[in-house]
Amino acid sequence: MRGSYVNIVLLSWQFFVLLLCTIISAQETSEHGFVITDLKLAVTTSDSVRKLTESVKYPSSLDNPIELSQGDNLKIIFSIQDKETKKGIQPHQSMLILSSKQTESQTPIIVTVRDNGKARAELDMRSAPENLFSGNYSLNLIIGTFSHNNPINYYIGTFNIDVSYSSPVLIKYGPKPEIHHIFRPDQKLPPTIISYSFMIIVLLPWLFLIGTWIHLGVNVSFLTSEPGSIPVIFSFLLTLLAIEILFYNYWIHLNIFQTLSWLSGFSILAFLLGQKALSDVQGWRLKGLR
Image 1: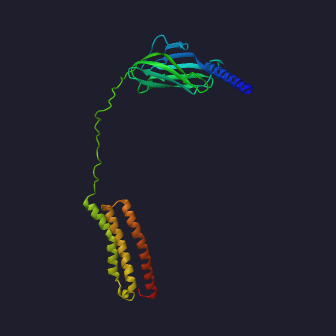
Image 2: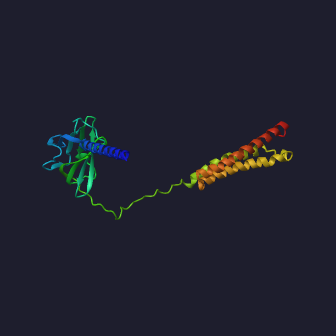
Image 3: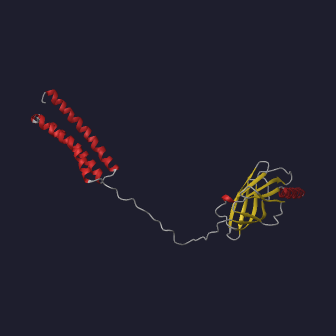
């Protein structure tokens, strides 16, 4: 019984110590944050003339709105320091947001922060974002990091922006602009006389070959002594004729892929038949038949 009482007391004491450590740790964590110092804003015109310079002490805001017109350049510099050590820190997230209640749009501005906590941001109205129009905007600075608690959403002040273009009316559903498409004109064929001229030029070698055979005299009597070579020779000539017909069809209606597939088959057949035919012709010469 006494041992049970001692165990209960020890467990209660451990629970009390654990609860006390948790409260102290939470208190220290909540105080472990960061602050913004040396916040300055400067506005220059397109002629690099200083238009405005303001210094703001965190966490207060600007007393009066800042005017930004077409061609102005806004520069913001500040420092981010640890709340306790006063040393500069580099947060994981830092961004300026321009928010408009009229258009319900937000325009982010990139903030660059160095290792020592020095931060800088710039908004050049000469190359302003497309969603930035004339109107009243509120500027907020958002900073957060994993090493420190209590992220900052700091309201800096109000800006009156005046640009030359106005806010467009967004149309979700409506007619689209007409698309005008001009089709490519039909291919112009050459005159008929040119086509026939090239056809005659292609056929001239065949006519010259036939005329030469007639002039020299063709001896075909030996074909009866070698009847096995006749089918090979005629097949070879028919294959050459088929290739010529294939080229003609390519000009008329076939595409390049269809032509190449047929031509590969005819070429292999012509090579085999031509090799056999030339071997037979050489055999005739050796036999003295020609």
